[in-house]
Image (cartoon, rainbow, N blue to C red):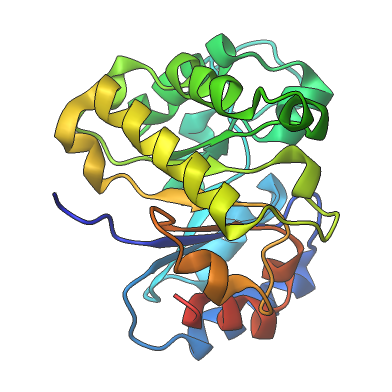
Amino acid sequence: MTAPVPLIAGNWKMNGLAASLEEACAVAAGMDAGPARVALCPPATLVERMSRVLVGTPVLVGGQDARAEENGAFTGDVSAGMLADAGASLVILGHSERREGYGETDALVSRKVQAALGAGLEPIVCVGETLAQRQAGEALSLVTKQVRGSLPQDLAGQAFSVAYEPVWAIGTGLTPTTAEIQEMHRAIRATLNEMFGAAADVAPILYGGSVKPSNAAEILHADEVGGALVGGASLKADDFLAIIRAI
């Protein structure tokens, strides 16, 4: 089994103006040589500018979403090719805020993943359950179903990651127990192996959901946790660097 290279990705969501690029530069300047790859995913308005200021640094730049179509009459949307053209190398797809707020289905996420691969972007595919689904005992079956439905066979042999983000933990300050995180990540790994064989062992499974400096070490050292998808804590260089160093 080949261990995955850890990935720490910061999702800025709908936050960040030109002045925020100083925080991205501070992340790059403060990074030590370590085992993890690091990425920042700013809003689309900053992708090109962030790519330019981070050129030559170890920090990768990603998008937060991409349209499944290459181009067309889709006012306000951004294609995977446009993100790649702006300097992105990764893209977050299927985030719970997209699934819930925009009605994105597993099938649509799968199409977006195919579009990302076609544009040369590495997809970070998000899955996760709501609090009601966990309380109903449906978390494992629901999340593994999302994995099967959201990851197309095109991913075989490609670089990708899966981010487990319990919806009820995002931005709430709540986190599952270490045992719950490990159980879910092991189930996701088993599903990936069913779908893609042993080749999927190199795909990191990230945890996302109120990751912060105070809990990062415990989460990142749990079994089958191959990194983190970080929200609010990625907006401040000091906090994000503390999480990176916790790996």
